[in-house]
Length: 288
Image 1 (tube, rainbow, N blue to C red):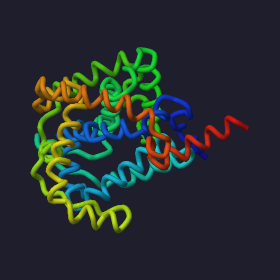
Image 2: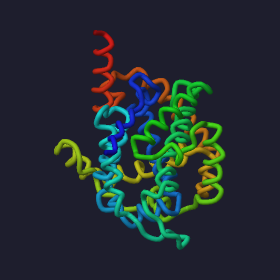
Image 3: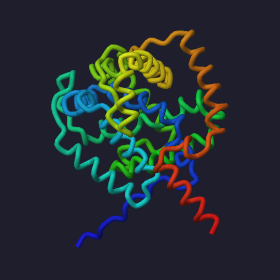
């Protein structure tokens, strides 16, 4: 009888992902990672044809965020979340914009979805973090991101195993595959209809609903600004997204404010609830 293989280990408590994944500064970079994912024709076609991001954007965003938190802070639940995602994507298939058949779990496509996290985390750290990652920190982060890939069900043979292997792979995908897909256009558009948030306390939702016609335009512009700005420049260029020197200066000013303000916030404001609880439990365990 075949023995059951042990679940892959999530990133370690106290590691780099443990510090950054659930913190508000990294959350600002998630739209950039998502946009880079769907710039791949196969991934973009899958999202275009099968996702509910248009009809249920807030619910879709909430579920995606919870999933990311589970990969890093979920402990024993991390591997089960990976299996749930694979079951969810099992029936997603079709034809991309280049006439090629795709399946969501095809290793080359599924691996790209995972791969985008590393360069986007690296880019966000340069602008929003206290200091850019050192070479040693980048290697540690990449090793931890490989652990996330295993949580998602990827095999080591389907992921570059070192940074030296990653960058040629990444540049080849940018050169051969990446394009301005329909979903990318929608994610960076400022005039796409988006309903007011339908999550959170009822009084807050009622206020947001009343103010949404006023709030939505500047929020949409800010989202576009961060989505394009926190994307690595070579990826931005491969997709064909515009970025000006003036925008670069604005992003640097925004990053300077974030670097000063966010570290002063208490944990309950800096981190999402799942990350905060996991970090508190780890701190308590170390104190015993």
